[in-house]
Length: 220
Image 1: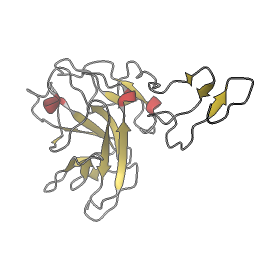
Image 2 (image 1 turned 135 degrees about the horizontal axis):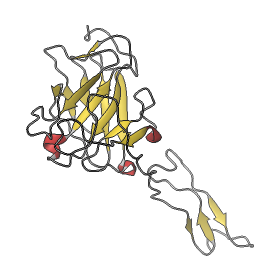
Image 3 (image 1 turned 180 degrees about the horizontal axis):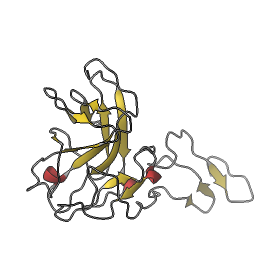
Image 4 (image 1 turned 135 degrees about the vertical axis):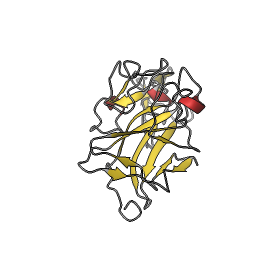
């Protein structure tokens, strides 16, 4: 019973998502794919799909929502394939939106235990009409290099690329994270580190290097 059993972290994996639909509006075309890497089917009834900023939706609180062992489940904002870009949907959610630059996808079980999380930033360079999916659904989805752009449109798609409900078909890998704080140099001091997204995450210091042969005092 999903109301009494706590799922282990990693029991369900966020394996693919479409944050920026191309052929339809984001209101109709956003979706999230989940993967069950285990040997047992799981009922996600009463689980929560959320982000870190207040979006939250309780999944199917009144009916079973089963994801098969080694199976996929597609959650979407719009279950109507005639208006969602040709997507076949297992469950329609509300009150949860995917930003096109920086956002989180968090799955919490019915006891409140976080099961999985993907936090993407503008460094991931979301591409309109192309999903991001794990190259291998068993790999760590917190590692940027484990993701790739979808290579082709799914069967029935109106033109957007992805592989909802099945193993990802990879095209190109996303570009390396952008260096928003490149090495900065003045005539006398260069900054080797700085606090900026995707670089010195969690760093508390800035390292300075003197490019001159003589010492430089703080007031110079």
